[in-house]
Image 1 (cartoon, rainbow, N blue to C red):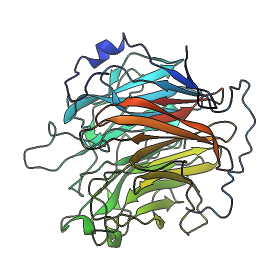
Image 2: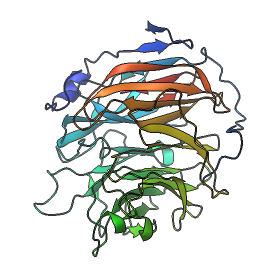
Image 3: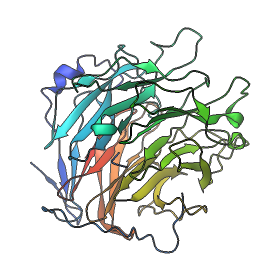
Length: 420
C-alpha cells in the first residue's frame, strides 16, 4: 500500500490494474488465503434483535469475513448496498489536505472503473480521518455524496464549505458539486448525509452561528432537499445549544425504511462533557428529539466517528468512548441511554467502528486499532449473534494507512466483507 501522504492523482488509472488482497477468516480464527449500509434509543434486558429474516438461498459458514483493499492510494471507504445487491463505494485518494473522491462499484471482489465525485479537482480532505466523504442512496438508488471542502475551494480567510454532489441521471458521472452551507459557518469536524426513496436528502454538520464563541455553543445544522438533491433549503439547527458540539468529531445520519431520520453527534458541554447524542425525527427531519447515548468526560477532542445502519427494521448505532467501540439497537419509543454491546478484549485504542447485519441477524463490527494523528494501524473485527453475544474468534489485519478506516457490509451469502 502506498503512503497516502504522497500525491495520487493517477489513482484512477492505477485502479484499473488493482488486484484485491483478500483473506477469509474461518470461525475459529484460522486465517487462510482466499480466492452503510442500507439503513431512539434503548436496549432493555437482552439485546435480542428479534429479526424475522429467512436464510438466503446460499449460505457460508458463520463468521466468514473477506478483506479487500481499496485501489492503490485509496483510503476512507464509505459503502452502501442497494435493494438489488449492488455495492456502491466512495473513497479518497490524493494529497490528504487537498485530494479527490472516487466512486466505484464492487462486484465479486473487483472494483469498477473509478469515477471522480468532486468536479473541482483537489477539493476534498482526508486529514483527521473524520472529514471525508459520506455516502447515501436515494430514490431509485441514486448516489449522493457530501464532504468537507478542502483549502483549494475555501476563499482565503473564508469559511470551509460543506460540499454535496449527486450522480447524474445517466449514472455516468456526478453533477457539479455545490456548497449547501448558507448560514452556519465554522465547520471543522465531519458532517453527515442521509437519504430515502421518497426524494428526501439531508446534509448535516456542526458549526456555530454568527455569535458563536466556541465549542460550547456549536450546534448540529441540517440542510434538506425534498427533490432528490436538486435544491436545498437554508440550514436550520437541530440540536440543543446547551450541549455544544465537539469541534473536530464526526457525525453520521440515516433515514430508516419507515421514514424516521437519525443523526449522531458528540457534545462539548463545559469543555469536558464529550457525550454522544442521538437526534431522531418522525416527521421527515422537521423536528428532532435528543437522547443521550453515553457520557464521556474528557477535556480534549477525541476526533471520533459514528455509524448508523438498518436492516429489516432494526436500526443499530455504533460509537467510541474512551478507546472502546460499542454498538446498540435504537428505537424511537425509548428515551433512556442504551446498554451497549462491546467486543471482547482490552479496548486500548479502538476507533472508527463500522457495522453490518446479515440475513441471519448476525452483526459484524469492524474498527481501527493503533491509529492516530499521522499514524496508521490495523483493522480488527468481531462477529455477534442475533442476541448480541460474541460469536467465534475475532480477527485482525494490518495495514490501515495514515488517515484510513474500514467499512463493512453483508454479502448475499450471509458472509461479510471489510474494505479498507
